[in-house]
Length: 210
Image (cartoon, rainbow, N blue to C red; front, side):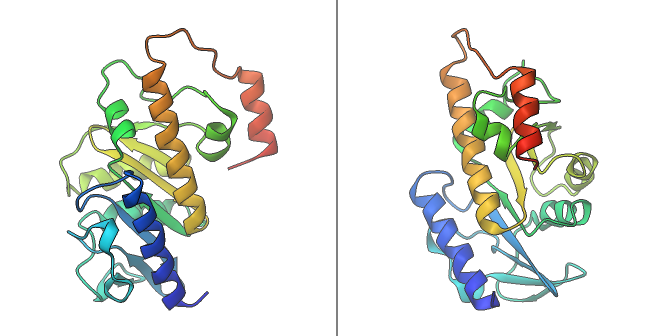
């Protein structure tokens, strides 16, 4: 796929997520791996108004070489790529329901959301909570690295989710599934729930390895 087409796809997926309320203002960022580096959404730019030609390009060493200044959270993306060599794209949002879950005091930090649906298990699996760091703090990259080799999705405490995929569509669809499951979790929080059993989860993991 040409770089021009990848740029257009980033802008298209970003606009779709913005228009459906999955992100807002200038929050969130997307990256896609290239043969010679990465494309990343620029800092301070709304997902609803991305110009494909101005999307940031970084070389294989993470240096900004063209386009607008990249997201200040570029290190999050690079950490995922370096720990997960098969990763082709990374999406990070401040989506409302996932952020709400990340602020709860009584969640399981090793696996934040229960296996409510089969599609959550298939697209996300286990979701660990990364401890809180201030925005732009590069210490966050080290914390993400510790989990990224075993998990393609993590939830940043009081911040939002980061999801990696083999291609951009995979990362976006997994992010959408995570946000929808967070919404379901909050809706059901005061109700007795019947999550999938460990045997049902194991069957899904065997049939649909992440």
